Image (cartoon, rainbow, N blue to C red; front, side, top):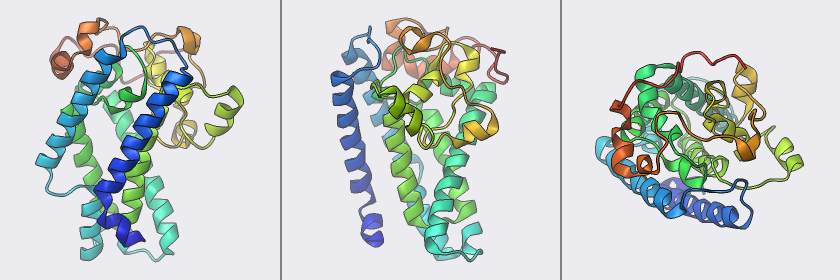
Length: 278
């Protein structure tokens, strides 16, 4: 079964992606968490166009991606996991957790370094928060992120199936935790012990700088809790909180052409290195 999953990696990832995208979109219509003021067509058409550009550039820029590199690393004996003796399932679990920690640290770095924040702030400049926000990343950030991920995979030499499961988990949780869906309070309280929920991650998209510099996790919430970057709820409440950053506040800023040039417009807003005191 493992071999079959690896051989059909693109099909598996596309099926999970489109399945979750449709499921979250339907859930947003049936049980939305917040009232949406900006027409969905404007945001969705431009955010999804960005996904197409990102995907094409990654395929053109890299001869192999994370799962393929993991297969090569196993064949060549590269990486930490190739020199330690552990049961296969333990290696898979550890690899997924280490990769998730790497993504958390990368996310913090993209907030902490002003030049990287210029790229990443396009993700935060969305004026609403829904499932397509989880797909809205600048192409240069996507390329930089992939380069970092490939470096981590080469250094670790994790099982290829672990990388595939991690990629599916990362993409799936990004769609889930950006979705404008309503969860019962008790369900959210229990779920966020193990998984980043939309209410938890929405805090990260607040216009307040200290809230923007919190809740960096995409899949599991443990890194935020352990490393002191966790904020449970937004100060203004989920219904009244303002989404976005202060520099790009017009609907015209949501168009693809404007999004692509945001990294070179104006100063890097605020001080992304240190969160403001609450």
